[in-house]
Amino acid sequence: MEAILTALRAAFEAASASDNEAAPAYAKLRDGIDWNATLRATAPASRPVVERWFEAACNGLADGPMAALGRAVLANADNLEWISIYQSYEDDPTLAEFLDNYAILRLVSPGGPLVCENMTAALSLQGPNTFYPPHAHKQEEVYGVLAGTAEWQRGAEPWVTREPEEIFLHTSGIRHATRTAGEPLLSLACWTHDVTLPIVIVTA
Image 1 (cartoon, rainbow, N blue to C red):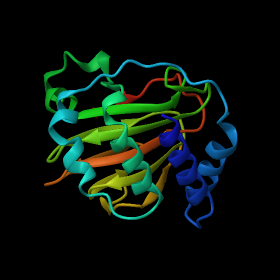
Image 2 (image 1 turned 45 degrees about the vertical axis):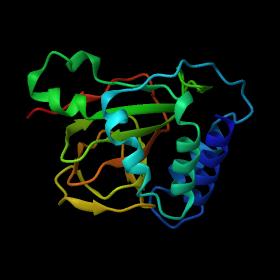
Image 3 (image 1 turned 90 degrees about the horizontal axis):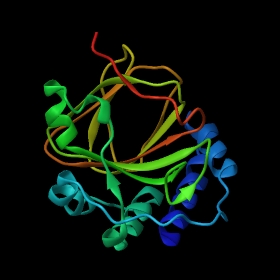
Image 4 (image 1 turned 180 degrees about the horizontal axis):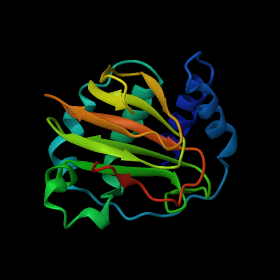
């Protein structure tokens, strides 16, 4: 996990130095996380989407700080705790396909290996041809694409194709969605505040 966190910190550093609108939030993460905190032990766990698509996603890693993070994760693949989210939606048949094709790997969070009470960083894996429906949360969020090309939508903006090494911002409360096509998506998602508040799927 130390190598993963070193790569994560380097990715934050590179993003903070960019002229992207997400740079200030990445700087908050870089400076707000206690990188010397004692690591919490987590039990290795997988999910069906990880078994099907994680290695295939990593085949799409290119060059850059996000790709370096992906390679650090791949090198420690047998020791990682991938989990499901949206447990409160597990009985919703309209979300069954999405939930089967999505998992996250917590790196920094109140319950993650590097404990932080007010910020989070996690990798997400989304299988091919999968729609992550519109959702919203109070937390300011930054994304970074490690591998795979997918489309994102923010609010009423048009769908935008995002490629590996791109970083971008979701401001507090903005509705957003993601859809993949023929390849899996490995990405980094981070929150800078209010990390215990829920995510709400927007159905109307």
